[in-house]
Length: 241
Image (cartoon, rainbow, N blue to C red):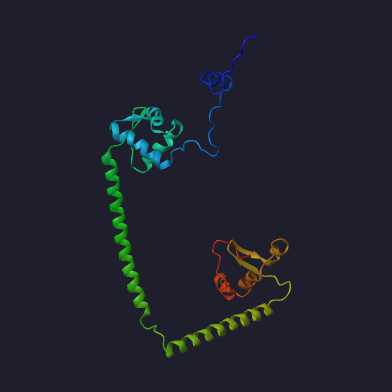
């Protein structure tokens, strides 16, 4: 019987055999929660499109810009809207030559636009300061003679009492006028759309006359006066009834 020699597992040959028998390891997975590359914001898209004009200082058609936009990270579908926003802000100029519309912009255009904006803001600031000084002077003028004093407090109390008395008199007048009207009385209504008989309005239950209309016609009050009697503004654009 011959002798059998066994190689230890840690020998080089044993390691080669074990490595061949092992299954291949799977590719590394992307960690969960890792987001894709973030797209450009509108302001970043505007800057990239402006850079196209500044670098070349040339004229472009819209279809040419739609081809150059993706190279700057701006998809072709949004190039038109981005360029139009630059045109609206006077950062890009456009002109129609024949049937084609050309766009262009130079670094000096942005400087001119900023200078124009700066001049406008300076003018608005100067006007606001002037208006502020006028209002301060007007406030000081209104304060003169209105300082807190015993005489002023007494005058304000008297004014309040007179207003309350005036309100009571108006209510008394209203009750007196209503007592003068009898049930079923026929008269004319002074309305914004002309003079109409009271009986004609009463036939339609859905559009009856109001007390204001009757008082206006029966006692020859102007419509504005009767609304003052009710402490309400006179609706110039609506009929009274």
